[in-house]
Amino acid sequence: MTNIRDLGVDRRGQEDVLDAAVAELLATGIASFSLEGVATRAGVPVDSIRRIWPNSPGLLTDALVHFGANHLPVPDTGTFRGDLLEYTRTYAGVLNSPLGRRLVDAVIIRPRDWDLSTARPAMLEKRYLNVAVIVERGVQRGECAPDVDAVRLIDMIGMGLCLPILFYDRPIDDEDCEFVIDTVLNGIRPRR
Image (tube, rainbow, N blue to C red; front, side, top):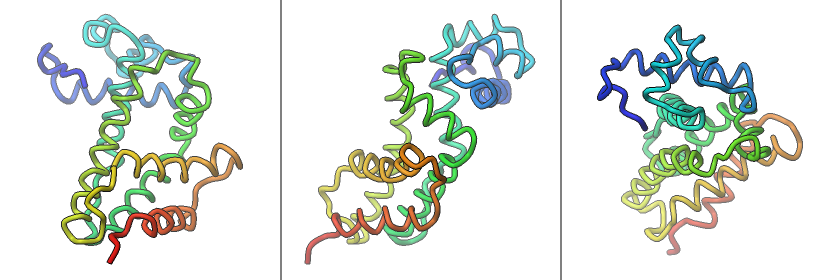
């Protein structure tokens, strides 16, 4: 993520711009997302934003990483299943929201609107790191095999959650979350 404090912008200003970028995406969609629209929402000159983020994909990437950090925390319920289920429920809540629907549409369904090839890894890295923490704790508790690939695990969970939206245009419910997690856990529990 770009560190705008190094450029003389305070933390609150950074968060205002990143929050405005998420609001702009929600309001306009990715095809109409612009630095000018974000500047208007944030109440700052567009040139101030351009000094930090010279292009819309860079700003959108940082805004989505910021959003994920604030809305997808790493739970600590005391059990591996509990952590995965709570993370999955939170993730489902984001996907069910209007913003989540915009993201699914923009990032998964219509990636041709922008070249998101450089944005995707940055957006996903934080999610992978969160799940790596959950997996590491699961291994320490003896609830998860030590050779589980956290990236593939979250990819499997993510696809299981996205399919109801992508194929059936229906929200993800708690039953979906439990089914996905229990199905995945049956495949990765340590063998006795």
